[in-house]
Length: 241
Image 1 (cartoon, rainbow, N blue to C red):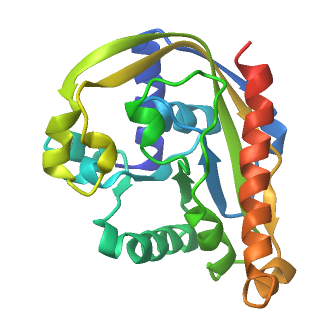
Image 2 (image 1 turned 90 degrees about the vertical axis):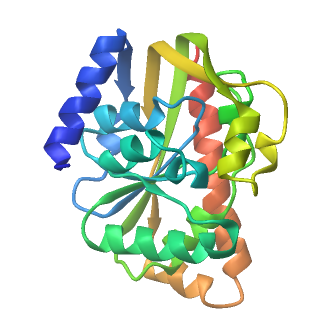
């Protein structure tokens, strides 16, 4: 699907749901550099919302099970998302796929909290612990002037709908995910009014790439991860009011 068509469908879908979106700090968005978008994640609407807000098609890395479940698989791949592989190949597949997309001029998106906030109903202003895979990707990718862009999705008004999909059913498609080994239903959050707040980008400079290849690798990975998590957490305190 073309980038323009994906953007149009995303905006039409939000309009059909009656979702009101408010974009803040648009001036922080890099215009002429490769961009890795990092965001919090509570709803199936998040990729659609971010695409509509940033005005570009975003190639999101999504959970392994989404590539295994019929219908869901067709929907996410049609919108350009790439489901992650099973755990034993997951990291290498993520790095190679995301790097190739960034080199081709695509905007790539990641949700570092993983699946947990999607299967547990959490508060709109809560941020879970960030996994560090996106930081390793950004620092090792052979790109110049890569911008890592933290974006906060701050729900003002929403409704929670029972999806009709039991979590136990999803474990059949991805038995490696312990979050699916429980009773209950997969929650669905539908935003009614929502803020999208763009944080300060973290630029991957030559100096930071050299630090990553040396003794300061652990420190620079932690710095990037904490920058994105901190920016999003701070923005959510205002964005969810």
